[in-house]
Length: 133
Image 1: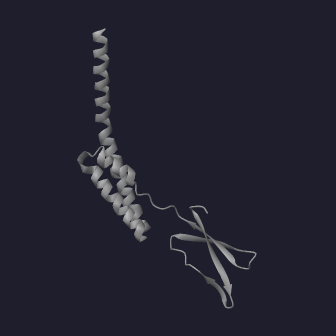
Image 2 (image 1 turned 90 degrees about the vertical axis):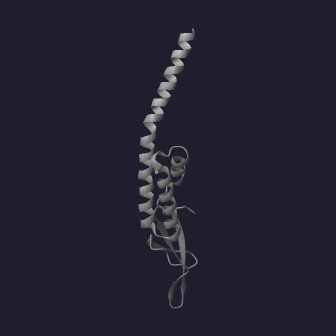
Image 3 (image 1 turned 180 degrees about the vertical axis):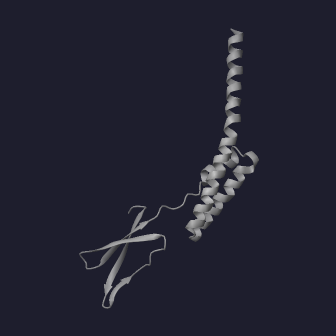
């Protein structure tokens, strides 16, 4: 069974079709197909779940945390995950997008000083090695 699709079975009773489970609101129904046993299968396509960017937020928090942007991104990622668990997918998308923007800002702020540090480290090492020989 694919992670994006699930099959919902309907059994025909004397008064019509009886569903075992109602699909959640964020799922879209597709046409029915009749099986050999006389039942109907409904293929339910599930929308992609919102991303919470929790791993990126953890890296931003532990490795580069300028102006507490990593902490803010981590908080919004946790809020996004909580909203996803509750079933509020729109709120989860909103919090996930905010976490992504904060992670991007933290990454952009931290990268130039790191590159300068590596450049000066390489420059110092290069000059030290050539001055000794």
